Image (cartoon, rainbow, N blue to C red; front, side, top):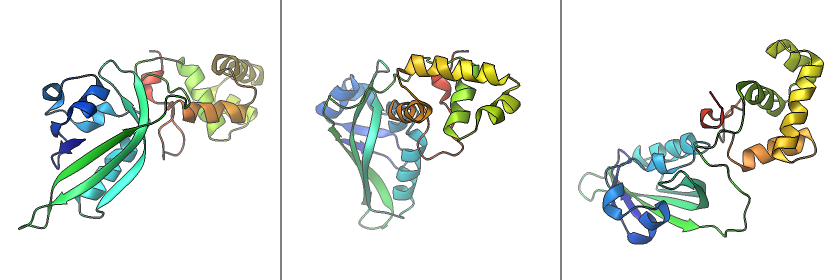
Length: 192
């Protein structure tokens, strides 16, 4: 459990919460909670927290992919509860509860792990948006054979058998931002 200010900065955290992040409670106080969320879900939870602080909801609970102090991902359920001031009626704090998921879930890519070249990232985004080989070749200035080569490379790299499985695994690993269209590979996963 952690206590957040309306600015989403952590003002207090208990030992199990800070232990999951891999830091002492005193080390995470003052840091924004969003830095401990995987890049693929940060915007989604930024919107959820904004809804609470604006008074448009009392609570939310959703699956979350977190990132510990070493940058390693972990999964669980995050619940946010708005705490209103008795005199003002405005949201003065948010209580965050984290319940870890079982460890036998799908593997999530580390936020610091670069998986794709810029060309592979653009091809993956196009496949996720439903573009055909011809559309991708025109947009990326590649031959159709070049597009198929990159798709085949991505299939091997991600250890899947077809384009549908490729995109599903990309979402499961947190490579794409949740709730964003058109799909974009998070910059953290692209080699520069």
